[in-house]
Image 1 (cartoon, rainbow, N blue to C red):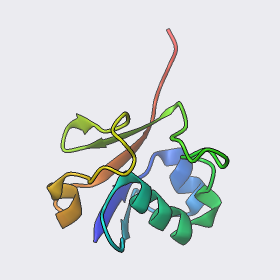
Image 2 (tube, rainbow, N blue to C red):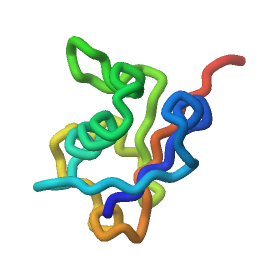
Image 3 (cartoon, rainbow, N blue to C red):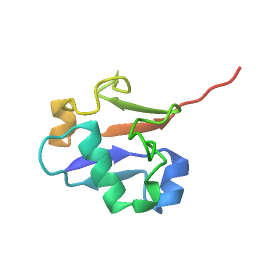
Image 4 (cartoon, one colour):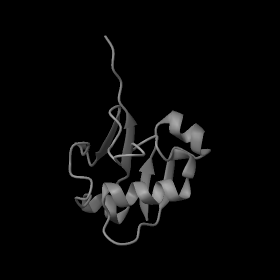
Amino acid sequence: MIRVVLPAHLRVLAHAGAEVELDVDGEVTQNSVLDALEERYPMLRGTIRDHGTGRRRAFIRFYACENDLSHDPPDAPLPDAVISGAEPLLVVGAMAGG
């Protein structure tokens, strides 16, 4: 079971709690987790990844095990602690401004 923590605005859109649990078939990567998330919560399609390119949106970041995974290849395996369910994958809305 993969644990995913969503930012508040996506929780509201998905009518979900702060943390969701997902079953992911096959290798656990950013893409496979996001595929499972969008399958379970179709209203999130296009909010985390661009519809056309499938790339992470600019103001969304991914963290796990105190590491920024945002620029890792989307098909790279996630850390073992995320795969085992010991740690969640954090989807964070980046903040900008001055």
